[in-house]
Length: 211
Length: 211
Image (cartoon, rainbow over all chains, first blue to last red):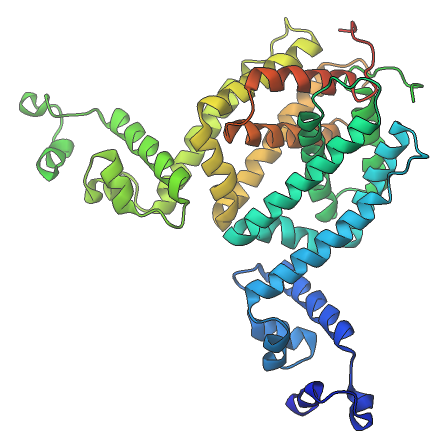
């Protein structure tokens, strides 16, 4: 294991090409393996040894890329947050009506969660229980609330509403439903249908045709 | 401190009456002190020593009542969950319309959180980060979702809706807003007004007069 890894530092020599995995690819492999290990064992019960083995690399190499378990977790947090925001942003466009934006954003978010269940569970469950990361996750959630409030503001003709508070409620609702999707006991498409109806028309059942 | 405590086990002798605090009162004092310490320091950074000092009793006495920090935390979880459910249930009655039930339940919940901010923060923030309690809190949240689904089912003439999923969303929204109230940066009465409007009429703004 160590002999292949040792060549990692030696540049682009042709002799090592067959064994070389590009740095960017290897980084993603390590993060993927770490997500799976954290999801199965929890952050505190996961060791760098286990993650190295799951990545198919040596422990020194893992430490060379990510200096500590905390740094590795932080890299997962960065990658998954970035992916999440990219996915969520697919749901909004100036061409969409407000109701379309709601439905498409919900679909984009819940499909993402269904496709990254381990990562979602690690971030929400483990991330919230590790002090330093809990603060980071809280800041990213706050940013998501801001973006949601901006969408609400842009989508209405009634500018006097408390969009910030409405966004807190909507993001909270979305997160709770996403947690169910991540646990695997809820179909994303069904959730999008029910949630869009609830968020758009409310419990009173409002006007069905209003867009 | 220890001399008064020693009489605690000796029954109702008149000689000790002036110094005696009834067991039930003392238990509540210890829980109150523990909530304040956990809220300020976090669960892991809180010691039984600090909690005993904050309660005004000896550490051996604290251990006599609550055998461990975990047991003490469990007692807080039980007490606050019970209080929370009692408060929340004040919002529903067969005499209320569905909209009144929504508004009154929200008001009851958010007023409770505003009056028990330390306890709410301890349970949601600390409880979710301590393995054993995270499971308990998840079970109590699931029970709250069931109760909410029952309320929704009772309050509508359209029996074919997915009340369980709607309840997940509503409880998630409520929890997110309650967290803001617990942080002290949101007025409960204002939150009740905005949330009732959002949940009842939806983002489309539905019919304002429908009850």
